[in-house]
Image (cartoon, rainbow, N blue to C red; front, side, top):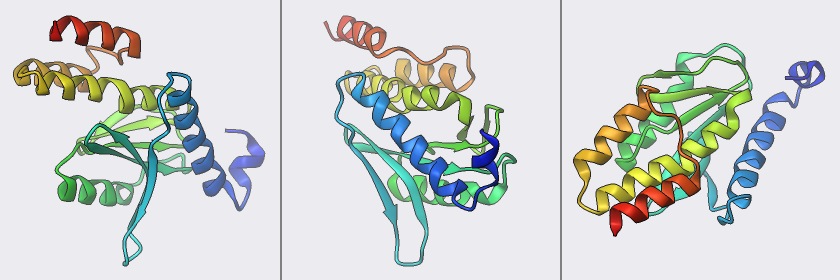
Length: 166
């Protein structure tokens, strides 16, 4: 992160805007419409980015801080409980990549990987489930979460999916 951005009073807002723009760019480069939203309830709880993926929303929390804080996970966990969907991911100003409390934590340098994970692999796994391949979909998702399989480029996912559906 550039020094000027790291020290400025608008650091959080600028970082959040940059991450959102990277998600838009990722979708547009794959000829997908940028169907993304922001959510806040009456008590002030919010999700920075909700990425539409079929019938589900993939929540993304964005924090400019370089040290992961446990309080960052609360809203993602609550949203997952309400929606019954995935825990989503947390993108932060640090560099480590890990899974905490069932939520993928991704450093700012890997924001493209986060966008790919949110938009292709999970969608691919969901489509496998719709085709009656729930056990295979669960196995693949488990392999992805354990980092035995990296994200699949959209073309690869589509090729595999159409082959499965044939």
